[in-house]
Length: 414
Ligand code: SF4
Image (cartoon, rainbow, N blue to C red; front, side, top):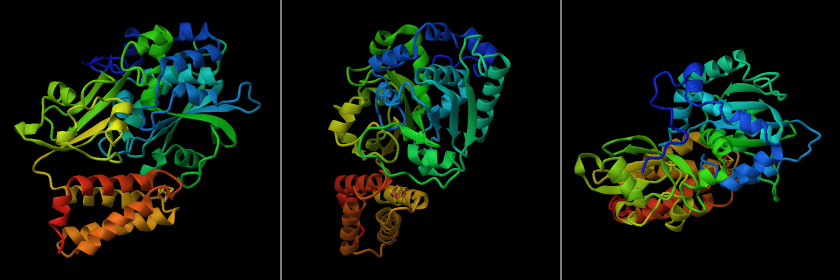
């Protein structure tokens, strides 16, 4: 079940150092890369079906194709390492154990979109991981892997590591770009048609760490090798997390399409202490919750999770056993989202705050049925009326938890 592509070197001692990384295959895709044209690289990645692994699942090739070619302005590659979704801690494995894989992926991807400067925007709290990533960047410069000539090839690339201040919303790509431009990290209004992201008025691609770390394999082995794993619509592999009430929590790379229950039982060794699985958040806290008895037919890919009313998200699964009281989970989530709303949109700023207050009142035993009805009605206020999908994520929490664990919520109100 385990299939290591990006995690291949994780267990090797000192895998983060250039010497060990090179001895274990890092930077070997670059000869193939520089024998191809930029367009050929974009096509290869497009044909591989590589999808964004930061939550959205958009096709990487489609995104790269939005960059004008030729362009009269510089283009930029921006790596989203602002991993802040509760339950999600996969990208930091790459930053910690194989930062040179990320650099190699950045070189391949920047070459494809004709970028000569890439930025890594890293979560503020990732102090250790920022230091480790910077050390790898410094090593790569010293070895001539970055800078004016990449390993003597006629291609120049600089990488700048930028530390965020620790705001969850800066993981949303347009808020990230605002922040990187030195402004408040507020999401931008989406354009109507398809266009690239814009960074200081120049076209840019924003991709997640794991997505970019998957590119060297595709370049070196070819798109068909990548497509040999996973499903037709969700090809390749992904780092899935398991946390909460599971015997063997951790990060595991598996091909898309594996049964969720098989993954929990075979890799995670089942629910902790042999208890019953009550609920599972499949891919980070902003995904709709699933009941333990709903997951039998679910496979770990974008399509299956969607069909079952949730989403794959970041692949950060959180398991909850039968001791967990769902209203407490919801209160905990509301506190988080209340704290992290950027405050631009009234429905989000006010709606998430009121959801948190109402849930607190209900949980404290002072709530009425009317309060619960008001809370349920707030879902409609939060859904589809805001600049970004933060508020709709809170609506999913209201809808999914209250409808699936109705008795627990109604047992609290008079
Ligand atoms: S939905 Fe919330 S987080 Fe997103 S832009 Fe509006 S206020 Fe900010």
